[in-house]
Length: 116
Image (cartoon, rainbow, N blue to C red; front, side):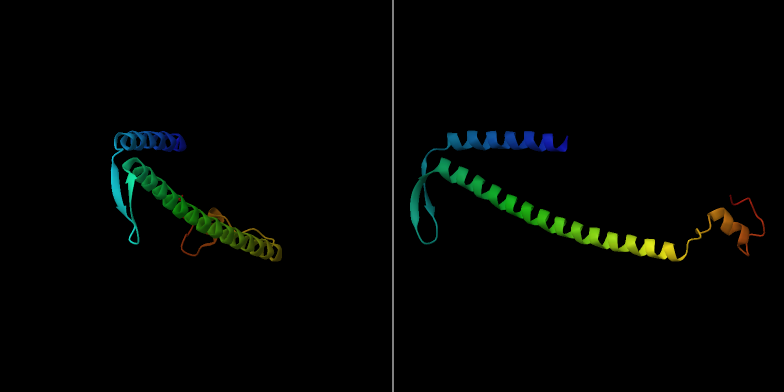
């Protein structure tokens, strides 16, 4: 459902930008720092939106790459810990006492069943 809302908002945003760009077709002077040129404002608007999308997409892909790498590290650590648990369980096959078993043997319980 979240993806559908994101898609709908993206389409609405693209439509607003397209309408805004089509309305503004007058030529403007663009200074690139090393050169200067006259371009229609529609190209400046659409180019700016395109560059913004590319930058945001790049940041998103970078964060996705970092998250996937962290997931792989955690999966390796999880497998290592599971192997360690299995190794320790095989060395000591008797199960751990339950909470009620512990209360029966605890020195301060004195057979008090009101805490249960």
